[in-house]
Image 1: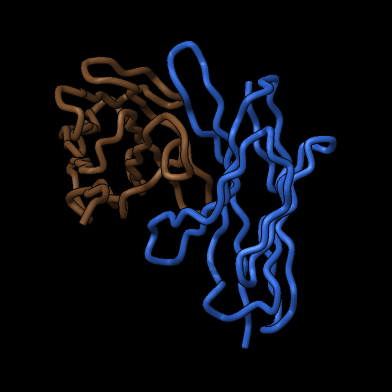
Image 2: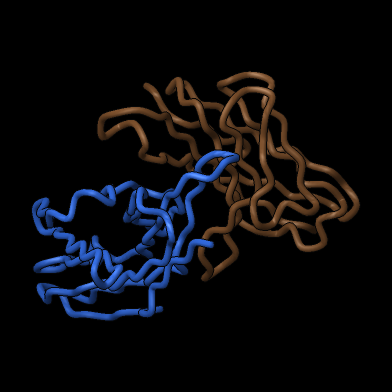
Length: 116
Length: 116
């Protein structure tokens, strides 16, 4: 089945550690996104990428890094510089062009990150 | 800059009542897309509807209907004869295009609780 796969679903991080959240899509989508959601809050954009080997900072990029070496993959690294990383992280993707399925942004199931 | 406002933080209704979720957006762009997503307790975001800025036709899908009015920059969502399974957080979102690509801006969400 086509879709967006995020892993792991739950992740615990010790303070001072970097962790990487995986996001893979087999929808042949061009653009990919990472959002952060805090309890009871909306979604805030961390990074986004329109094409391979190119990405842009969103509203809260500090303490995060990404790469886009393949069209299908957009991993997010939460670095030790991120002071309050405990949150729910959502990956999304979309394609461009005509038609309902294009230009609609679809989401993965999310990853819960907890700092212990 | 883009902004989406969902003024209703929480709404509680009794089953079979109709309920309307409000969404007001701000953008200087003339071309944009508006979305509604549903987030059940499991966390994933489920796409409900997309509307582009040139299509002000209202839409009905089963018990769901959407009222898009450019004159008031609103894109309201109505659930008719609500059911307990409709309980979730609902997000309105706005997609615009920038020189660096497109991004999706979310409202803060409305927690809908449908009581039996």
